Length: 112
Length: 115
Image 1 (cartoon, each protein chain N blue to C red):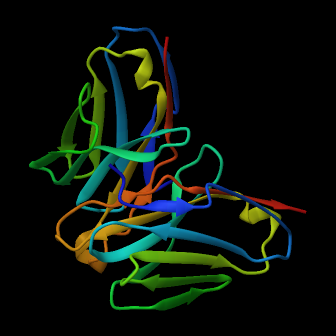
Image 2: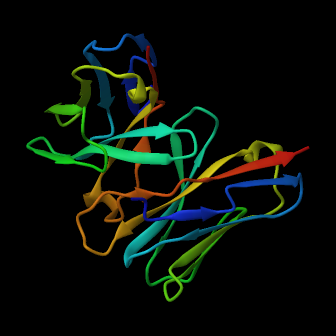
């Protein structure tokens, strides 16, 4: 079963607006990562946040992590049409030598 | 050249046929993974390998087998393909020694259709 669950499943916004996607997970983690997938293509790593971090920034991306609520959010500011893609959260469990566990993704559409 | 390559990129086959999907990487990573993606289900892990002598089953390994021929090569086989194996298949790599965080790098995917 999948560890992460993204919310919403789909999101449609106007260019220039901010987009917020959420991820909830079930068990303790070592780190949480966000990936982007353009239609039919491989996933691309965006940003990683460690379990002892609360917030991280990379360009127009802001990620927060609340380990007490077992949740994370990805904020994309000033969205562009090129941000249209699916976004996945993935977790590395605290149990150590384990692969990533992916959620089902949020499909973001940015309308020009 | 792409760091993680997959061949073929597209394949149409018939029920019962044996199919092999290949993955090669030039990143020098020790870890390799095979995922399948179905609409609305995200990525599900089929098999993974942490080094050449290590093979582990993932969430959905039934009907699949793998071979880690070398550090740079990891192939996925469907011994007798069935229609519900129609999906998009991704290979990925990571190097735990580099960052300790298991960031993954994905290939472009193989679209497999089983008729």
